Amino acid sequence: PVNDDRSFFGHPRGLATLFFTEMWERFSYYGMRAILVFFLSASVANGGLGMEKPLASSLVSVYGAAIYMSALAGGWLADRLLGSQRSVFYGGVLIMAGHICMALPFGSTSVFLGLLLIILGSSLLKPNISSVVGSLYEKTDARRDSGFSLFYMGINIGSFSGQLVTGYLGEKVNWHVGFGAAAVGMAIGLIQYKLGARHLGAAAATPSNPLTADERSKAYGRIGMSVGAILVVGVVMFLTGTLTAYGIKNAISIAAMVLPVIYFTVMLRSPKTTKVERDRVKAYIPLFIASALFWLIFEQAANVLNIYADERVEKTVFGWEFPASWFQSVNPMFLIVLAPIVAWIWLRLGTRQPSTPRKFAVAVATVGLSFGVLALVALFGDATTKVSPMWLLLVYGIQTVAELLLSPVGLSMTTKLAPAAFLSQMMGMWFLSTAAGYGIAAQVVPFYSAENELAYFGILALCAIALSVLIWIGAKRIKKLMHGVI
Ligand code: GLN
Figure 1 (cartoon, rainbow, N blue to C red):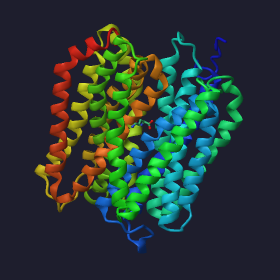
Figure 2: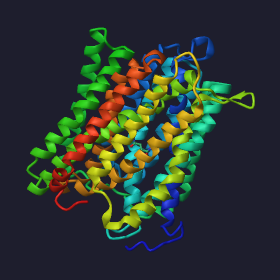
Figure 3: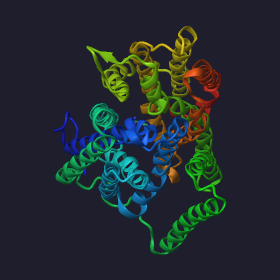
Figure 4: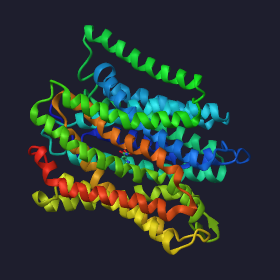
């Protein structure tokens, strides 16, 4: 049925339901993440877990890797078993339960159980809520792109407010009260989702490609094998004494790097992939690498830049020191302001827009530039005096411009370059580039310290600029492999 409902800013009423659900989910996700590194590394006397900062930093990265890697599984479950609408609901329930666990002051066991529940819940919610957004529109509906832009706004309104609230409560009152606020946010999102569910109609309500009777046993066998493989790795790690925070960190980190290699090989080799589709997958590979390096730098906000804000930045205004995690809200704030401007520029440029590979090249150079700024601050300052908050505002401002060149462009490119047989998994593939970035970051972030800022930020900036040059030079060839997709 054609959905010509225009009651939510010209969009179907169901978009409002999804907008507010994702807003509250991101409120909880980013809110908790904003204080996680501080909580893990705070001394036990200060209510934390007393970890060394480099390990705490790494764990924040592997947590991100696990969140985005698991999107593959959640997408599959929705497509074949649950349908997206139900997956979103179950996912939200698990996420809320996870934040409740973290809100309880029972030490590391309930914290790690909480993180695991949030990972499982996000795998069901995060990829599938976007599929429901897509299903609100006909393939030809011109409102689809602007619907996604509106949805991205909801993400950032949630992220902006969540980090202010949990950041204040966590840092100034008590960590667990902060985590509790995240749980309350997800609860409001769930109630809102249930109340608004009738507006979603049939959009992605049932599995798009349900398992047939004989596929079922094969699929359950495969699920059993995957769970078994994870258990075997766990048992081997336990027996060899490597089932420690470090061991788990390395295992997830390796998985985040290996999984994309396996996935690309499967897609390229599959008999269901046609020749043109194979070229498009090949074109996706350099862009995937660019995206991974982009998120590798960008997603250090919650660990490295959080620690930087805490230790190195002047935060006193009118005699009051504001929480370091409040800097986390700067990126979503800039995004809300800049997104409409960038959308307007693309509209104005029309067909004179740069190609997707060129946008990616500029995005990677720009995110590199943001770390270049921090390297310069290190070069001209000294590690014993605090720096002006303006520098961090500038860094986040530059990163937001880069994000707008890559993130929304990447989402729409992903759907266009996907081979028909891998349409839904390709969304998971996009999130996998974030996971790979986080997985590599887990190995990189422990090297950060106030003493080696010039080398740390400088080297990452140079890597980004070098990759950007390569993508820029190769842009024409990549575009050719895309066969008409822009
Ligand atoms: N900030 C966006 C979100 O939370 C994109 C994050 C990402 O893909 N790494 O949805």
